[in-house]
Structure formats: structure tokens, C-alpha cells
Image (cartoon, rainbow, N blue to C red; front, side):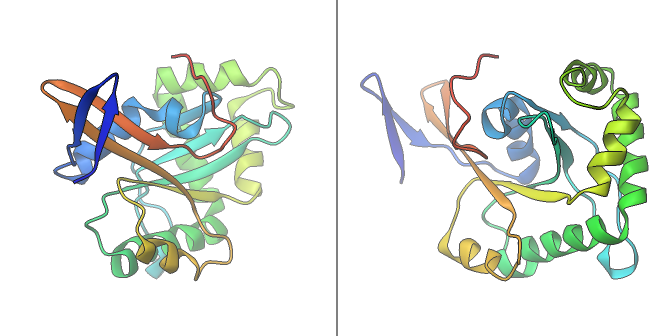
Length: 201
């Protein structure tokens, strides 16, 4: 069993019981995982057409590059799900949806942001350094560019890395693991970018 030591205190791996529990931890630690200049839009809506339909766990707008913000489809997964029959199938559906259903994604995202006062305020805070004056203008540009996929997971296995090699543009990966010592919880994570450092929340 994996363990970590923090100031001479030993923490043991305290795995997540289910995907909902893992997703809650992802949301709580979103700035560490995805970057301080990102907005996590927690909305689950069916996107895509025909056999390419799926329900993302969220959307992520990354403002790290203010000249070209990036939109991600977020998939939160636990490693007990099969890398081939479950995870890669979902990623393939989202990839197809990003190409075939950009208008649908645009509508879903604009409504989700405007319906969530926290997300709306966060997005509007990031607009001034960009070339976009409104949320609608921003989302239009985001959905006209390549939409990427990021997978948050609690274990990155060799099978998962091998499975992702089938994609021309593999999804980004972030790792989040939970550890416990008594009643104290700590997290180990690997973020979406190496540039993410010293985040103040």
C-alpha cells in the first residue's frame, strides 16, 4: 500500500469509494489540478449526436494563455473502470462530439455559465486581459477552436497510458490521490501543467 510522510507523520492511501466521492475531491482541489487561471464549470449535459453522445462531468476554461484561452471537456474517473471499454470509449465520444456538435456545446456552456453566479463572476474576472468582451464572444471562440479533453483519475496505470496512444491528440491527465492519518486527510496530485506552482486559494 502506498504511503507518504509529512513532517514525520505517516499517511496511508485512502482510496475513493466511488466516482462521486472522487469528483467531489477534484472540485475541492480544482485550482491545484487545473491551474489558478482556470474556471471549472460543473455541468452535466448530454452532448453529441447518434452514437457519439455522452455526458461530460464538467467543462474547464483555461485562461493561462490570455491570448488564446482553451476549452476542455472534463472526465473524472476512478481507476477501477476499465481503461479500454470504459475510459477510452468515453474519450472517443467526447472527441467526436467536439467536432460534430460544437454548436450544441456552445449553447450548453453559455447557459451553464450564466446559470451559475460563481462561474459567471469567475469568467468575467478573466475577460479583461483577453480580446473578448462578453461570455458569449469568449465561448464562441472557444468552440470554434480545438476542444481538448482532460481526464482526472486516482491512478495512472500502464494500461491507461497504452490505451491513450490510440488517440492522435491524447487527453491531458491529472492525478489525484487521497491519504489519511487518523482524522487528517492529505492529497497527492500531479497537475495538468508543469507551470502550476505555489497556488494561493
